[in-house]
Image (cartoon, rainbow, N blue to C red; front, top):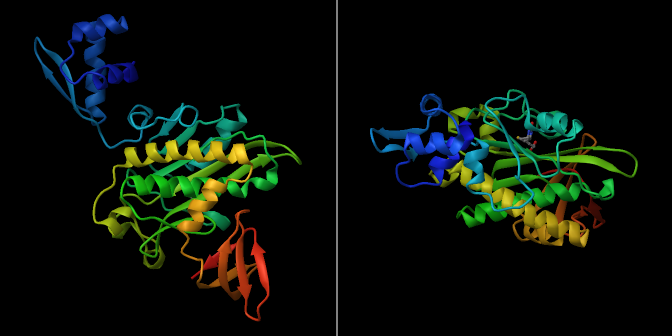
Length: 320
Ligand code: BTN
């Protein structure tokens, strides 16, 4: 009911009378009043004037389905958005929902994560209302070997969305989004699969949107930052997540069509901070120096080891 009221208020710039709302929704005026009160408590600024009715002045900075959908033009991705005020991890919640049959394209968003997960078993700091912590549920009919490409589709979608909003995001293969040499976003893709068949894939995206310097501990501060810190202004979280969902759909469809994800790889290559640089490659606890030559059309990082041997890396951890 609350969502329906919001929908009416959102679609009307002027006042809507309580009588009109109660008629449209088939509930009593008292019920309308009760829901308005609840919405105000959630942070919606609603003006109420006797004999005129209600008018939505401002929505809170929340990533609820109603708020995010104002920015979503995609058909399948984000058709359903599950919003948590607090959740252990959106990837874990997405997996639980997918196990129960949740459909392809559903997006899970948390205002905070109490057990956010990073790659390689690390934790992911996810303070409340400050970031964008979200996961997609995907059910692609592709070879499980191609799953790493989903991470590149997600990275490219973040870059394109950032570009549309005037942020110069770069990509550090395979899954980091960088601003001014600092990590502002990470992607963790998990899946459930049988030998040749995928049950579901969950790309989880964590964006340090409006985190302040105090949100990072001493160690993290050296490598990570937020869009707000790097750009000097707060980000509209709803707009950014909406744009990522839209770009994700476009790039995902293109990946499903060509089976390679060329469009996404091209974006990751154009925005790569690694190509042409000397890097340290960390594999199986060993570190070795290499020069990055390219990101090839298969999404592999082409490196030249000291001594001249060239190798294509399919996955891994690289530092500059
Ligand atoms: C990394 O760079 O280590 C990956 C970080 C991924 C974080 C996101 S936040 C949303 C989703 N839920 C999680 O628990 N992790 C991912």
